[in-house]
Each structure stands twice: as C-alpha cells, then as structure tokens.
Image (cartoon, rainbow, N blue to C red; front, side, top):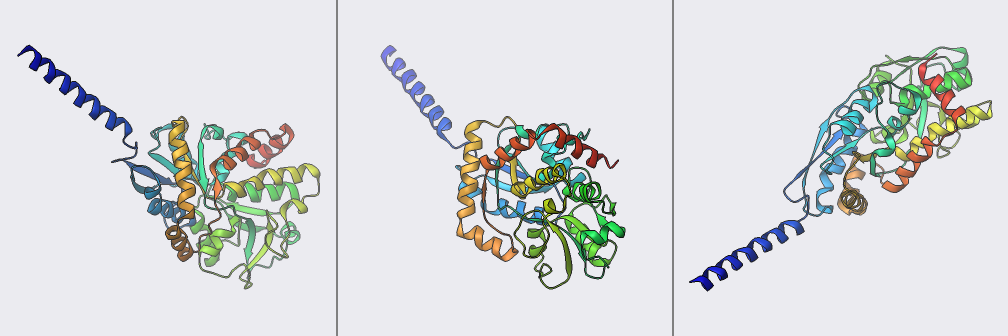
Length: 336
C-alpha cells in the first residue's frame, strides 16, 4: 500500500512537471492578441500600413497570435506615441505605427513629448520614403522663391508632425511665407483640403502617400513640387541645397533622417529582448511574404523593408546631434 502510494505520488509529480515543461515551451504568443495602434485616422497611408501589417504578421510569429488595429489619432501621432510609451503592455502584445517625426519632439523641447525615443523598440519599416513640399497647380507658386514673395497656406496636424516642422523650417531658413493651418486629424484630411482649395499646399508630404492615392500627381502637373528631402525625383530641388548657410543645411539634414523612419512598426520600452528579436525576425519574414507583397501592390504601398536595428541607430544618431543644430531646430519648432 505504502509503495503504491509513493508510486502514485511520483507519477503525479512527473505529470505535473511534464505539463509545466510543455507550458514553458509553448510560444508566448499562442492564444494571445496583438494590438497595433495607428496614430492617425482611418483611410490614410499610416492606417493602411498598420492594417497591412495586421493582416500578415500573425503567421510569421511563433504561436500565431491574433492581430487587430486600433486608431488613436491626435497631435500628429503624439497621442499614440505617449500611449505606447506610458500605458501599453510591455510584453510584446502592444505595437504602434506612428510618424517618424515623433522622434525629434523631445529634442525640440515639446513639453507634451514626455518620452525618450531611444527607449522604444523599433521593429522595422516597410520602406524608406521621400518627403516633398508641394502646392496644387492652380496656386500661382512655382518655386520656393515665389513663396518668399507670396503667403502660401499649408496644412498641419500638429506638434510631433513633419507637416508642422517642415514649413516652419523653410520659413526660418529660406525666408518663405508659409501660413500654417494646424489641427487636421491626419494626412488624408490635409490632402482633401488641398483638393478642395481650402489649402494651397502640403509640406512634409510623403511620396508614398501621394502614390497610394492611385494618382499620377507627381508627374501629370497636378502638383508643383517645390522641394524634396532626398534626390529621388528628377528636376525637383533638394531641401538642403536651398539653405543659404551650412547651419541651415545641417538642420535640414537632421529633418531628412525621418525618411528612414517613414512607416515604422514600434514596440514600447522594456519589452523582453527575446520577444523584440522574435518581432523583428517575424517582421522581416513578413516583408518577404508573397501574399503581403501582392496585398501591398494592390494598395500601391512600396515594400523595401528597413530592419529595426537600422531604425534604432538613426534614432540614436538624432539624439547625438550637435547642440547648435538642436538650438536652431528648437527655435524653428517654437514658431518664434
């Protein structure tokens, strides 16, 4: 009887250990749900990018979690960024797609940007992107020199957005007279306002967003392209080349770093390292997936993936910017 009792206890302990071992070896994401917060309104390119990720990420993560999207627009993506930094779970089940411009807001002295962008875990981006400053063809402006002479109305979402920082930078460095109307929920609303004639132009407009509308605006004369931040488009002035001083060129180079951070998937601080590694690996595998690429092609979303560590290094470089550049950018951002 005693022996039988001991054998029963030993058997029960072995079964418990086996169950525990299986539980430990089960993928973390098994049975869980990931929420991707999109920092802008529905219908725009950030929203489309977040939903593209949501449709394809699951099968490239161990455990195949469910993935949903939640929109949390406001202040050029700043509200979603603060939510990710302060409130979101730090276990790898909360991710976000935000504008790369939120990286520089803490550096510019924005009192609302109470985060350190270096602490985020940058998972990856679907592509780099060019940014342009453009006006609608009905506007009597053909160059930045014309905007020096004529007040030109452009739209912005708010602090944390290139739509605000870029026209302010041009006003400070080039002497342009952009009048900035802030408060638009997202880029799609700014675009509609330009089409309706409510606005005359849009600075900080990504080329990917223009293309994703299914239009040929870059080439058919609908838009007048006043400046670009890379050298991708022929016969369009490059922003840094327009700056009359070396200090101004360095400021515009600083802002141009955003091209690498154009369409990021970001995780909060303090996510376990092994989970960050799984997310980064799964992201790059997803970017190679023929189904994702076909899906992206239908939406006119470019796929040329940027690995998370490359994005992380760009963020580190921005935080190492020379103090004189930061001082000038702070002045620009203050609007004074």
